[in-house]
Amino acid sequence: MTLDIDGMSVLDRRRIEAMVLGPVIRAFQGEFGEERTNEIVRGVMEGIAREQGRELAERVGDDGLESMSASKGAWRRNNALETEVLAGDAQRYEFNVTRCRYAEMYQEIGYGDLGALLSCARDFAFSEGFNPGITLERRHTIMSGDPICDFRYRVGPVSESGRGEDSRGSGGDDEADSGRGASEKS
Figure 1 (cartoon, rainbow, N blue to C red):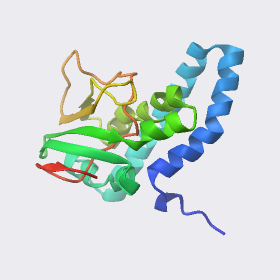
Figure 2: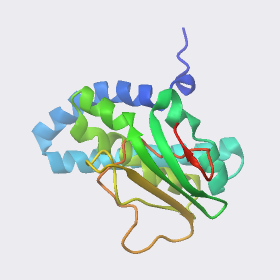
Figure 3: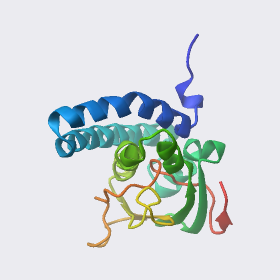
Figure 4: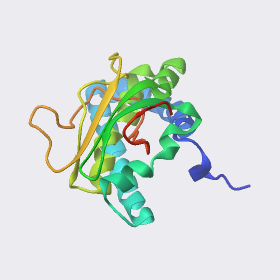
């Protein structure tokens, strides 16, 4: 029997990953300290996301912002995210996540504090891997207790205060949505 990992929702993949990695991370935190362990895990997650971004750009044959956002259905599958699209064109894609089942799932399985590390740490690196000219600004995240995640993708540089070394988390990977212009529940 072959497992079709690409056919799974990202939410299901993250649950499986967390159930395996959560206890391992906790053990390493106990042995080597939380700060150092989290730093290593974050680096690994970012490396994986960067490579996944490159692979997606190759698979779709285009590294434009519209192609990236149109190719992200797996992140929304099974109503994993509810989003409100604010703007979208070739130069910018802005949306808010108003409900994040990734954050809910991590809380449910007892790893709410690891959600940002296992999922949200990937968001910025994914877009960098897809196209280094696409930048993400995010100041608020549901994972950190905010009411929304505010994703602001742009082609070109991001403002000094809004870059993406956001360690607060967002709930689930680079949750772009293919909808444009109007509010949409995914």
